Length: 270
Image (cartoon, rainbow, N blue to C red; front, side):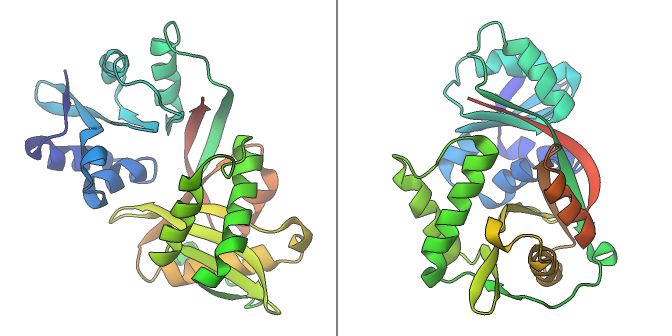
C-alpha cells in the first residue's frame, strides 16, 4: 500500500532510510530539513503490514528507496504524478522501477547506468599539500561559480541549465548566500568549485565538483577537495558523492583524497 508521508510514518521512514544513509541522503534530507509543503507533499511511503518497505519523492525528480515488493505499487502510484526530469536511486531499484513503467512512460533521453557512490570519513582523509586556499564562496564569486556549475552540468547531463532558466541563476545565488558553495584558489585565481547538497545526521553529499580545464593536472583539485573535506568533516561524520563510472579522472581524484566506493546509483534523464 502506498500513502503520503504522515506524522505517524515520518520516524519509521527515517529509520528505513538510515539503513543505507549514503544512497538515501536526498530522501533523508527531504524529511529532515525541507519543511516546504511541496517537498513534504511529494513524499510517499510503501507499507507492508504497517512496516515501511519503501520511501519515494515525486517532484522535478523521482528519488526512490524501495524493497522489491514496493516497486509495482510505486510504479502504479507514479502514473498520476508525471513530468519528472529524472529518476534516481540505487541502481537495482531504478532498474526495477523502470522495467515496471517503461510500457507507458516516455523513454529517457540519457541513461547514466552506473554511478559510484563514494564516502570518506576523518580516518580515511589522506594527508594533503596545502597548495590552495579554500573558503566558502562569496557573492563576488557568483559569475565564476555559475559558469563552472553550468559547464559541469553541460558535460555531465548534456544540456546547458542557463538557457531559458532563471531558476538556475537564482539557485546559485541562494546557495552562496546559505554558505553551501566552496571554492579553492591559487595565486588569486579560482581553481576549484563544489557545493554541499543534501545532508543528514550521517553524511553530507558533495556536488558540483569542477576544476577549470586549463588548471587540471597540477594537483590543485586534490589539494582543494582534501582541504574542503578537512573543514566539512568537522561538522559531519562523513562526506559522500556520486560519480559516473566512466569518469575515470574524477574517480581517481576522489580516491587520492580518500573516498571509497560504498554503492551504486542509476539515473534516468528525460
